[in-house]
View 1 (cartoon, rainbow, N blue to C red):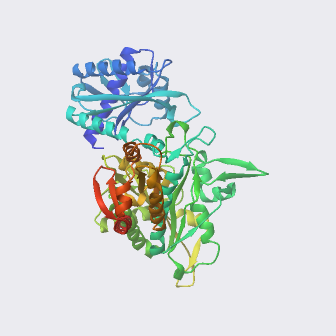
View 2 (cartoon, rainbow, N blue to C red; view 1 turned 90 degrees about the vertical axis):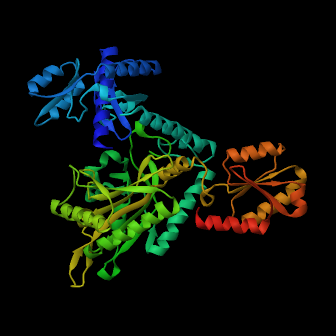
Length: 569
């Protein structure tokens, strides 16, 4: 998000808060930041905000914009700040944690505790739109009160807002939760753990095709795949540092006298495999891959469809290397990522470098070395990147990749994390050329990331119209009447023998209805079988876009299908 747009949207959040207080004076304010897609503000109000309320609030916001109120910054003492915030308990809580300068921003009669940035006047916010209301726990903690979060967006020009709202309309049509249900890809149920989707037959086909894609590359790129347990004793997580830094996001349980956790990530178990025997420098690099399920205790309020879940699997791997192998291994990972995103899925991507967080594990010197190494790799490869200060994992800095889908939305997927800390905590070593023991270095990496999330992204990117290699049903055969069923079944069997995913629709419905249903199911190719096709042994083939080709030989069609599948286009 550009800094000037961030300032504009931050000012829009203050305009929202001012409008709410003018309309509903008893409301308590929480926080209201700018975000990548706009802004939000959290409110504590007894009555829920209704669609009619949002309309009134937006009208009031536009009125405040027209007032052309000057936005002024001021620094105050803590005593003065407490006086200004005496009726705002959430602000007072934030105030107690502030150190150094205490700043407020004022516009008209509205004043708010804030570090900025902001634009100079409310009149600069020319294009503003409120989008929806959602629940949000105060400070993201489920133990705290549930607040009401109003989302909105703002731009400098109305044309930009119009373009963005058009994109949102398109996104709604592509909503993977809606399409996932319509296309039989996945479902959820109240009896299962929230955030644990069921993959149905069609979804399982997509899932398995993604696994096949990655596994084929693993063979070429020297990975060994393993299967690891789901439950581990507390002692493992204490050694890895997860118990200290990640426990709140883990599912823990008592079994006998021992405390266990479902694994939220694979790295500690892969270190155990690495340590299973003595290792030499000649063995390195060792690339251990794992598709085992992971469980993370996400807040219920943020769960949704496939893109935010509690149970998932990643195309996860951990690479054990010596220091002199770091750059080459990361270079190889960039090649792997570029193959998947650029060559296969045609995604454009951007790169971020995330550095040491406030709560980190290990030696700062090793962190500095790891960050320096990642920066060097990125600069040597002449890759443009932005630095995200303090957003690294607790055990090491990372390079993240954001892909842009068909309508321009960014999604964070692949990650490469350089870790000097975890192997040392486990005393994971290798014997060097000098005969001495050296600490091994570890790269954590996921390329597609969560398979559940990636499938959700793909559904929306393709609007359910998957490329042939990924489609659950590649060909649908529809019959004109019952006399055509035998030939259609023979054709279906031949396609199956050639590993084409095919379904036969021989219902007693009109041919028009069957074709329309197949198009709604977004099947790639529809074959209509009538008396003419039986007699000529040639096919009438319709694409899902409605283009029809007559007189196609069966063997020719199969050959062309295989070529299209192999090209992954």
